[in-house]
Length: 292
Length: 304
Image (cartoon, rainbow over all chains, first blue to last red):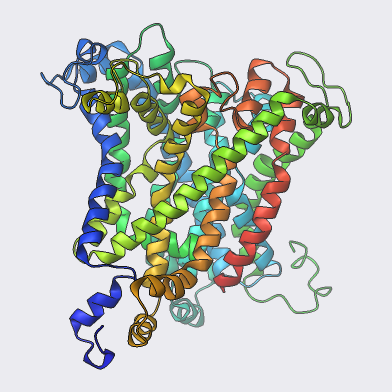
């Protein structure tokens, strides 16, 4: 062990190995194992999406597509309702994201920055709502939405998705607004701006990164949601991608190739968005939602 | 609390600047919460006290649904399956998450890149994950992933139908849930690990503590808090899981992987017994409340 008085970079590096590091080898072996565990299912998806029906059915060229084909992608577009489902998912995610951001930004700011009686209870309430599992609410929510006449239509999703996106995004934004320097807002108030003006002109622009990140989360949560979409909508022209994907296997024929192509197409937009916020997401999410 | 600005004199303190704005800003949030969370929740409680069948008016039956389920063999199996599924998944996620955090903490270059890659399962649609794992375990179409590997390694001569056996199906849904969930654990543990002061490790090293002892006495205590929070969060979400099990097994074979949410769906939407279906999910409310009390203690205390 190195003496701490000589704590050179090397010493720092050694201690940074979290105490258990029996050196680089163990870390590298671990890294390779994790990469395999994470990437194998993604490779399975991509791999299968480029194989023909016969290649899949008769298990020829299992590990790499040989010959390589785009037929699942073209077939998905031409022969299935996937484009329609994709459109439905996109509309739903956009509407829900927009609604969520308005509600969550206002709520998050109020809880983080304004003084009012019961502020702590509101913060607790938001945390509790963020934890409510959709499995607890889908039956009564179905009844309520049916009474409103919105089931079997995307409107049922516009109304129900904010029940989980809003608490989550509000919770994130409370953390985000709290982290912004108080002085800027106070300076604006002293200069004669009212609360609304200080919020709109000073805090909102500063909070843009947090708002964008929350928007991406709201989008992803809506994009991937399954239970509500399955329960609230039966009409095959109004369903979203996650529900539609299940129809691709439970029909008369097993469309695994198309299914995997659809998975690739559905996952890519989310991955692209996520690249964009990855750094903030990791720090913000962990600090904001787990460490508090 | 909303009454305060209306009756300012009754409130012991003069309302501070911002109360009016606060109410205005929180109005949409409260509207949503009351109409689409609290009101449906109230309806759920009411529905569980009725024998509502689709197409018939609801009739109040008191606690009949609850008593029925307590004596129902399938429901007992559902409870057992849910516990096995949840405890196994959460335990695996903690262990893998710790390993993942140690690995990421150990590498110095491209840590962010790897961390991003490792989080991919967490942002991918659960339905896609479930479909993919189902096929990887299954033997149809083609041979599936595990069958192919085992056959090419000479360990199997014919494809095995993993998903057709109760144990195989349970294993498959646990693996899929674990795979989706552990990256979140790993990233949370990594953040907590990086917050442990380097001095603590240095002091331990000076005292001659072995790497294992340093992990046990410095790293683990530093992670205690975040481990508790991730376990509670994951417990609540996993015991309520619907997507993975519904897509992979529909609760089958038989009722071998039937859990609370899938059974509730089955009873409500296939047997059309809404009263009983909703009662199944309400059995989880106490679990949820205990979880919330514990989590709030940890999350809210840290917040300010």
